[in-house]
Amino acid sequence: MTAVRQDAWSPDDDLILAEVTLRHIREGSTQLAAFEEVGERIGRTSAACGFRWNSCVRKRYEDAIQIAKQQRQKRNYMKKQTYVATPHVSAINLIDTDERSYKNDPLTEESLSIDTVIRFLRQWKGTYQELNRQIKTLERDLRDKDEELFTLREMNERLSAEVNNAQSDYRAVNDDYKTLIQIMDRARRLTVLTEEDESKPRFKMDANGNLERIE
Image (cartoon, rainbow, N blue to C red):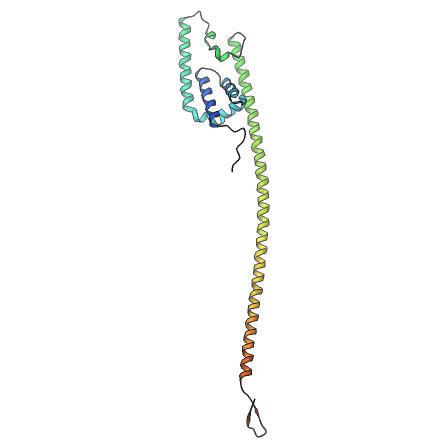
């Protein structure tokens, strides 16, 4: 029976990761913000969520990602139209404040850009660390497999030697058995010949040249 890792991702975890990430893409937010939200919901780090998304889940939702990006473009277009209609409203204030609720400082293009870069770098630093952890785990598993393979090879060599010895012993016993059968056959034939000789009449010649039967 295959052991299940305690930190394995369940189908529900993957579904939550996909739904939240698609929502953030659709609303124009960053994937890192999505990974942090998912991490808080399922008790994992944002780096682990990012690694899971990029390595496994993303490929299953390519069509949904394209649809979310189209919805984001449409959303941005509508915001631009609103900005043209009301030029006194700052474009930066049209950004959904829920996406930036983690900051209390005033929103500016400069702070948004720097913050995005920093968060992006932190995300990939975490992803890099997660990848290294996965690689070390794989290397450890490979070492364990190599040790197991070495043990199995030693066992195979030992069993092969035992089989060869058993075959040699069998051939020796078989040869001894054939020799014994031959000896017993010769002894049986000698016994039969002896009995036949004893049952035959014996004669001797007397002084006159006549044959006389010996009882």
